[in-house]
Image (tube, rainbow, N blue to C red; front, side, top):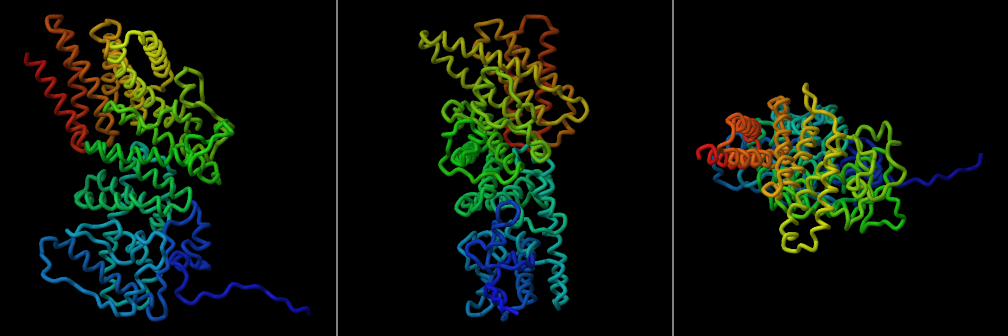
Length: 572
């Protein structure tokens, strides 16, 4: 029998495999910074390939015991925050097993710190979650741990529940907050998969932040500032650790969530900063040129080709979510949008509902070009999904707002009047045509995103005609009709059932409210029925704002301003 030789990779010493491979019980090649199995993991590579290098000197039981001791002390601090510490606890730096908990990998050293991360005032940190999920598996808990360790696991369960509830709270409203990824990403959590195995630190921290904000639970809300600090920290360094297209998408998603959070809390400077960051990453990654018909299209750091239809769909939806966010909020304060369709030549096709990509990706065109230009030219297209309608409404809102700001310049330079008039009439026709294509708002179970699409379209009309209301009876009538259409939408919607709405509603309802208040001021001396109709409309808008002002700082401020304006007119 002929002798055969086999080339075999040398066996790794015990404890030399990365944490993920040991946890998943697969063979690790110990490659740095990311081992082979981690880089091939579904989703484009794990974010946290770390080498704890726990050797024979420390058993799994010892490892868990120390972690439990740390977390137990941490829980005590959380439960008794008023008890001041009178001494500083020190660890023996020469104790051999302590060095085992310091990662030697240069990749993502912040993500899996095996010690529990706390802040100076004893708030729960999202790093606690990592320890809880990674170090409290059922298999590890039956290896001779002491009864005190088992007792401490009860506390682990409560901490783990906090984070699970945070994710659940977020997912309930995720599409309305600008979440463009597939929500099935988190399906494995119910079967015990650690969050760190499905999402990047930046994305997880941003989700925990939003979950704590939305939960309306004192248990979660008291940690909101700590979650915000974690989200800012991890998002600020996420690109330096982004080794895959998935990681870059997760960074864009985290920036979108942070921008939405800051806008909701009336922190516009920070919101615009994170919105601009999302735009920059999207454009430099080539997300505006997906399926471009232009063979010369390229980006600074274009992503590798998508492996699946769903992966490509997430990229398409990512771009349009970023553009929608940017157009809505930059137009809201009169700033020019960061994404200029004329300057960047946007070719990416209109987005589909995320679940459709896996079911019927043929709905996407083979190639695409000048997507927004064609829409503004009133050419037919395939953009009929809810994400596409949302993007279109945001584009019209931004275009109308920008054109309105040019009116003063046009007055100063009459020679440009004909050009302005042509743009005005074209955009007016596009807005009207778009409204006719919208599906009606369902009286039973309104989809909040469809409500915001209708409202954006009507406010686009208001923005476009508002500069001419005192010059043109036609423009005044168009703006007034748009405002009353928004009121009609609210009257046929069970507002209290929505639970959460996009904070941009505050700006949109304020615009409609101001039109009605102006009309009320001009209606003095006219028929009483007109005044009563306008007062009823204003009060409908104010009542809607009051429902959501409790949870949204921006709407709270806008409500106070609108109420003051209304009172000043009524008391004349």
